[in-house]
Amino acid sequence: MDEFGVVRGQVCPQCGIEDAVPVAVGMPDAELARAADRGLAVIAGCVVVDDRGGLHCRACSHEWGSVDDPTADELILAALLAVGHDDVVQAIGPGWRQVGDDVVGLTWFVSGEPAQVAVGVGAGALVIGPAREDLAVVEDEGRTFSRDDLLCSPEWLAAAADEFARARRRSFRWCPTCRRPHPPEEFAGYRGVCVDCVRRHHGLGR
Image 1 (cartoon, helix red, strand yellow):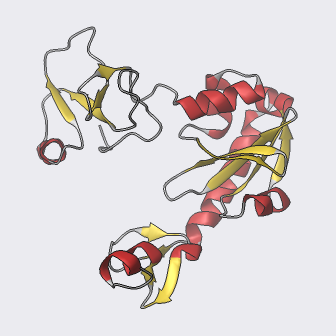
Image 2: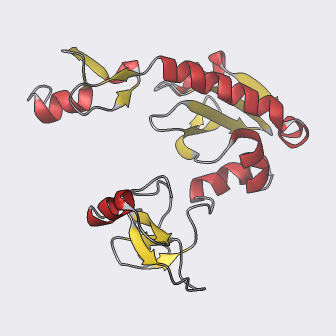
């Protein structure tokens, strides 16, 4: 397992809280052990239990599903397009989360952390473009595809999503305080520090 931490979009079916971490099966290495100590993963050990889930809710300890299961937002995206979740993944990949409803007549989703690609869905078509804070701008900058394009030529959508993601990542800047990449609109112009760190650590903007 390469990634640890809260799995975005996975809501616990028992308590309704979005605070699940992956359950790791097998002999833990040093990285996994550190993640488990920090509460970013649960170690299941080497004995595989058939009914044990792949997600562990930190709020109520319920376990269910798998980290590969579609999130509620991904199911909404597939339903809006009237296609299967696998069709969406084949064309534009997983990890979509809903960020806007009825913006320029479209329902919007973004993927990546920080967000890199945006998809707007409506009237049987979808717009793929770079993730922006102003979703209305994405429609002008993006490309429009039909549902048939998604089903019959998923490589077209995959190429567009990859192109926009690459361009978006090139615009990211590194915050020297939190040591994380951020899009340019998240910088405050104060010592090259992101807006969040300016508020948290530099006492400005409060």
